[in-house]
Image 1 (cartoon, rainbow over the protein chains, first blue to last red):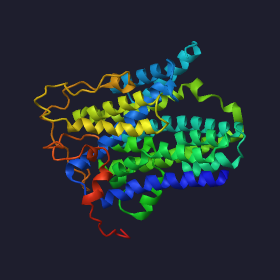
Image 2 (cartoon, chains in turn blue, brown):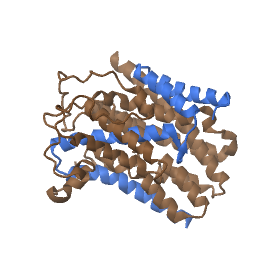
Image 3 (cartoon, each protein chain N blue to C red):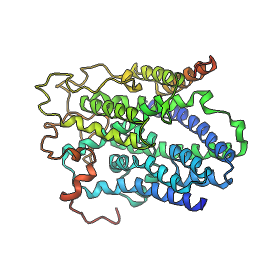
Image 4 (cartoon, chains in turn purple, orange):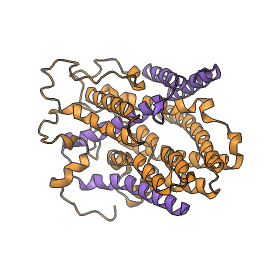
Length: 102
Length: 303
């Protein structure tokens, strides 16, 4: 049962991934609609970032994580290198937790 | 040489991401064992499913003895890969081998890295590099977690839970210079955050596609700037708004990719907005527009 569930999840996930790729060919998309695709991806990524930054499950994520993400986002806005953004966000969150913040 | 420094920067950037991925993968491996699931489970999931969020969610539900919920929740969480696939299809190219393998390597990070790169050749390369690197680091981490168990530590103590959203924000920031993309992304992100407490996991992120509806607002120019601005939430991305005015009317149209894909990272407003669209839903899922108008082209079996 466990194996079946994992295989179904794997097959379903792969089907979702592949069908987007294959569907793109079959759709005659007008130019304005084509332009929506990267925008849709940006909206999904922004939603992933926003929910991952602020929420843990259906609860608020506390303070350390959003604070770390905020520092990372500000650094990114100031055009800091990607690696600095990632490391700084993690460091701020880790230090705040070390200081006892949730 | 510019190429060398670009390569170096890319490797350095990816190194940070890969290291974080190993650590989170290790926590996945350790958690599944701690749940009491058989040792092969994390390996099977990390290689065959290869989707971090869905794996954590499904492992919990499997351990609770609820395989049906595990599958449904995992698939719901991964449904966002369909629009991702539409967005990166032309990056993957037309060869079947590339499509079949490249689809499996699709992750949020690979998509974000690829779409942040305007040049189609480099975009393609970066998609594959990120995809392969993350697959290796995720599975390496999983193995470490299984071997070391709880000794791998809590990724939250290292602040890794803040690293991933910050990485995504850094990757989408350049595309937010385009005013329409910024409106859509910030609206979608806000909608997703607000809906998270009331909807099952996965659905709020999908609802971010509703952000595309802001493009339908009528008479954009006459209602004054800011009239249709999304509500300012506490969304982490809000703080990272690029300075306004970077997308003035003088902004030149970027060169088109050879494959006709509008430039993901630097989309510029088209001559006309989406006015002709009769149905509000059309904007939500491009796939839906195919209902009537689809013409199925004969598929090239071989490139």
